Image (cartoon, rainbow, N blue to C red; front, side, top):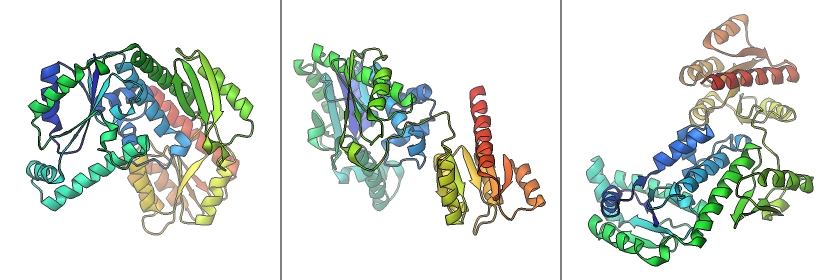
Length: 407
């Protein structure tokens, strides 16, 4: 039996349409929430950070953690496993990850005229037309960013992306359900051998992507009839060695019968390929208003395999802690605006798992006592040897790792 995917604009009567389709077909609904929850459990990444892949927001730590790439890999894995079944209805952003080669999927778009959507938002939320329009535009921008990332189109509601586009302001939920029921009876979208192979390849590709990302590799992955093609899009000094390592990982994945590697357009750019070590501290935030000092410190830490992000004031540090939650924060004490002690106090109150190392040139014994009482991991002078600072960062990371292992 076919699978139905639904992608809807906000305030386009999606809930009522889904209910009618379910009544007519008996198809169970799988939502983004369910897929994200399962991906989160498998990946060990919080649900709110998995959901971030659907927006155009990317963590400042992503180049260090590859969290976005890992999230996508696990989302694809969950979807691929669900597609081993049939007679399903999948709604939301995640459904758009299903490859076009899987032909027994009926891709449905639900959209309505803006005036109808605004009126629905006004009625539901008891807000003005202007407020409703602003909300809808913001949500449409999120949809557009997602579809552009996947299909390089600026119009998320383009008919070329779907098998059928239905205007919910001109067609009742019952009529829409009837049209979809009729469509899934057509033989062209029945589960055929070619589509079954495409599902198997999608599942294999997802598992291969996970196997690679677990080893710290981020490369393009494609599987066709059990043959895996890996595309390297960053320059690497020893290409043949990387290719051998990738092939060794890939051939061990169930469903892969052969592996090919190639370089993509990005290989010829100046960026250099680097395998990510997920055991090393990766979400380090440096907070200091002395720009030259903190930039130099970041480079010196990088030479010791400790990559970091940098902000120059307390306000930015607190905002980033809310958005991205670093593991370790290296914090200056004396800064204009919100000073280091206040940043420490707020961070430990709202995000106690963040380990804060105070690094200052002006701290007194009283400051040290205050910081340690507030929960700082360490209180160091800026004159500290870089090796000692590196050891302290690694010790803080070890404490975090042990705490997570106990959870």
